Every structure is written in C-alpha cells, then in structure tokens.
Length: 192
Image (cartoon, rainbow, N blue to C red; front, side, top):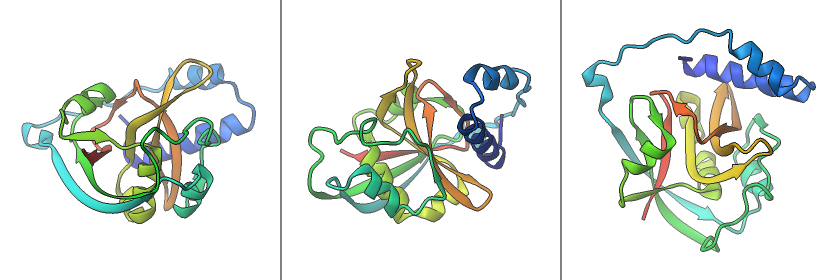
C-alpha cells in the first residue's frame, strides 16, 4: 500500500514515462515487481468520517476554464471536454452542498457509491473542479476522487478524476474506476 506521498511520486513518474514514450506494457512489467505492504486496520480506524462544504458550481465553464480556475501544477492530458462533457441537467450556476467522505478503509468505487444509498450522489467533473478550486489546501492533505463521471479509454478502462499532490504541487489525474482505493482517499459527493 502506498502512502499519499509515494502515490503522488508514482503518478508523477508514470506521467513522465508516458510523456517520454515508455509503453504501458513496460510500465506494467515494472510495477509487477513492486511488493505491496500489508496494513493492519484496527476497528477504531474504520469509522466513516463525513465533512460538509458549500460551493457554487458554474456548469457553463469549459473544462479548460474549470481546470485553469484550480491553478494546478500539472494536469493529465486526457482531462478534456471530449472525455468529460457537460452532462444533462448541468446548466447555469448552482449552489451545492458537497460532502467529503473518508471511509478510512480500502473501498471499491462501487461500494463507496453504494454505501451512500439515496442520500448522496457522486460528484461530476465540473462539480469536482469547482470544489478543488475552492478548497485547494484539502488536496495537499489527502487525495480526493469523484466517481460521478467516467471516461472509457482506448484500453476499455473507465477513468475517474482524482486530485493528487506531489511534494507541494497539486495535480489532476485519472485513475481506473475499478481501482481499490486505499483508506486514506476521500470521495466527493453532492447532496441530492
């Protein structure tokens, strides 16, 4: 299991490798040699923490404008308007109540969504960008992901947005929806 600093470094290395023409197969081969750490989770560590925030979302912003408003140090090149289009019902400006959920245990994307039942829905791309722009220091404390909008890449993997840090830099990346999220990740939801 990687801690947030190690994960940020790994993401940065993968992005650098991809930008320098290293193939996915070469990266995959190298990663298979990494041995994960086993982390014991004590019962008191598994309590779900829920924190509420407020914010205004401007759905009329393009992805480029929304990302620019977040003032990130780096952004995955596949975070584009074509891959993350405006969804039905996303128009104008809306005041929203955001909910940041920390399960404090490893979670699949499907289980993270299912545990919220009908009370919350996962944040979409523009909602995620708005939240990250308003609360940039949260991203420096822990990675945050939004499961409400997915892009399917050429390999057939569903990708979701994730804010990460690398040292003091903030970045936006894409991670597979099928990833089992480590316990230090936070999930961004919106009140229905």
